[in-house]
Length: 394
Image 1: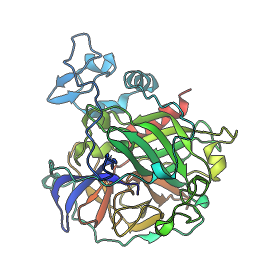
Image 2: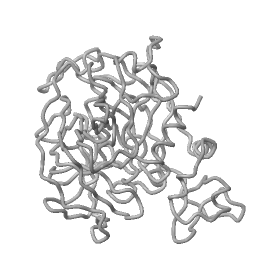
Image 3: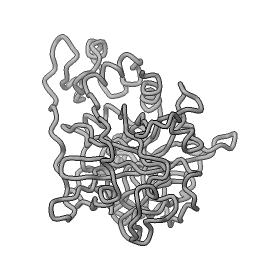
Image 4: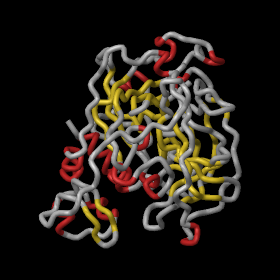
């Protein structure tokens, strides 16, 4: 059954050791779950005097491809990304190309179902609890099933190929500011599209809205593709994730997870002429800078690791989120009590806005080894800029 890798982060909070949900669950030749090595990619090079390269300035390791103007201004932290404009994001994307040609009929029920959970990686980081930006872990909340049909939900699954096998995540159809009513945008976690430092974008990246809508594959039953993907298989055309995730991300939870989000622009393999939003019947807005002390959060996803099986959509009504941070200079993550496991990663976190409409405020990024809580990035300026870029990109 499909799953993604839970990698460890060294943190003992009130009830559990923190684990990151930050890689796919590849299927090895024997069918046993083993961690796939990161795909090969360009390592960070030394900074050049002319800028446009990478290096260490003010103790901060900078990524390759930073706009020359920022290097000339000697940025001292990732905070300078808040000053990026569309052209800066475009320049960055040109140096981190995403290539995902449609392979007709590539995804079938067997491929969707053959990924395995991978082993945890060793602990590496601990929360910055001494800086007053990490709260005690909230009480665990038991996940409950989302009523069918799923075609009335904006949720679905992401599938991809990585070095060593195939993996999956959960994801959400979001509104496109530049194409109201006709969005083809999907929100998920950064680790669901890219392994992070030294890696390359995953291949065969697709979104399946309303996965297993009828329950045909529930309980270990085999089901045809039409039942698993009732609204089609949507291939990613463009992808954007945070520069922080691309440069720093990896198989263990740390400060990179505070920017662990991604947005995909997708197209229908059958080219029906309808957008994803029109096909699904709706999309949710993204609420940036949501007041964390005034929101009540519900996380949604397809958990797989026992006692779940990856075929049912679940939700945790976590209420007011607490805070988790590995770097006090970055926005603290949102944390809610929830017992969802691998497979829920990338799934949307929703909260009602002042007008009562639901909006996406985060996505599942990391959780505890004991499956007692989940954490997701706080979406602010960098995330808003990423959405603006992919929305306007032609």
